[in-house]
Amino acid sequence: MEKCKKCKTTVSSKLIFKSFWKGYKNFSCSNCQTQYEFTDKDRLIGGVVIGISIFFSGLIMSFSELEIVSKLTLGLFSMAFACIALSALSISFFTFQLNKK
Image 1 (tube, rainbow, N blue to C red):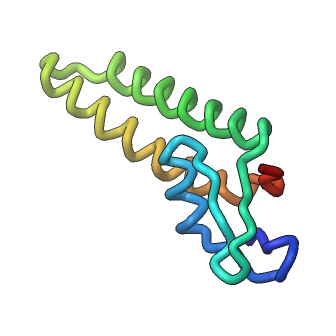
Image 2 (cartoon, one colour):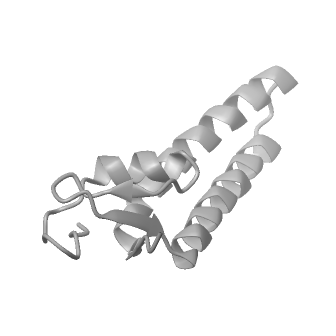
């Protein structure tokens, strides 16, 4: 868990997850309202997570012998599941910096 650099309050994983999926929006500490932003490393991790999810859903779609509609449905659901699961696991690797604005 990431802690606020000013007041040492634990920042909620749910808050980080929502901020990540809203396009790396800045977020603030619930206690002292200190603004934080994602670093370039976090954006790279997010890109890798999405890339891996797309790659694996493509593999699943290419090796399954189903009709095209079933393949697309399976691919979309597997990609959505992989994106959500991998991004939830990757939150522990994120580091944040104070928003200087």
